[in-house]
Picture 1 (cartoon, rainbow, N blue to C red):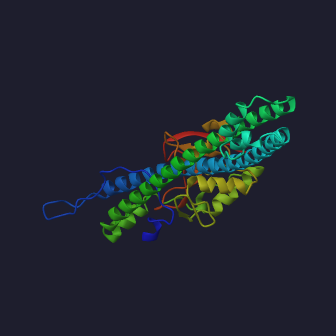
Picture 2: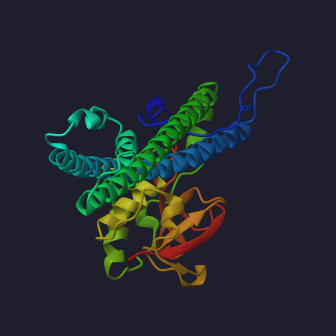
Picture 3: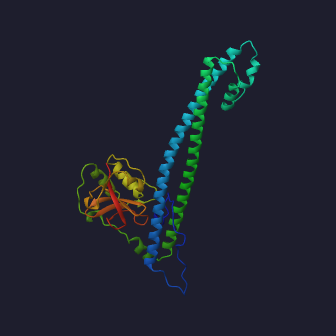
Length: 327
């Protein structure tokens, strides 16, 4: 069972004071219910961190794409600036040909675009064509400065996002290690009792509620994963976290969703609990940190936690927040 608790992709937030004091002759064995509550809390806090990790990863991916675009734009602008600079230099060479080119020598050895522009502005003998060239050059310098500033800003945001990811991953690892330690302190039969606490209904026990349209494909995919492992950050094919399961289920129906429970909450029209239909996404906790899929008759399928995996459970088995209908 160890491998089901320390996963290949752990990472996120947890309380600092949870743990068992080794028993002595003067101390009673901890109640199984107490250990269960502590393990449940560790799992939930790890899931909260995992969903924040998913959010941060989506943000980082977007920032990286934006940064790549800004860098490409800056390179294009740098090339355009070089072209205008060559035109200015050629014009000056033609103007001063045969009459003291040394007067503009410093202009041609300056690598700094702003310094180059400043040196040119001190020269007074320009015709209209040269004035236009200098205006173009000044415009290109400003455009390059804007792009360089935007690129530097994105670089700072990327760095901050990477630090956030690392912190969340460390928290997940800590939570799961502590949960494992709690379980290892129990006798085998006690551990089995805790692991079976959230045993889900077997698929055969769930009434067959027909789904229509694309929702049918999403429900079929999610139901086919019952019994698979829960792994933080996973999205198949044989292990999932909560938003990874719902994302892949709706992907099977041709609908793209983000790998984030909080972002999936904005992925469709809101649905009242009384109007739920199979395939609707149902959300839990505040702030939202868990998502499942409604399958009818007051039941959901969800990737619960490392101790339970993908299961079938009651709609109100967790603090219910709301529902949306993708597609």
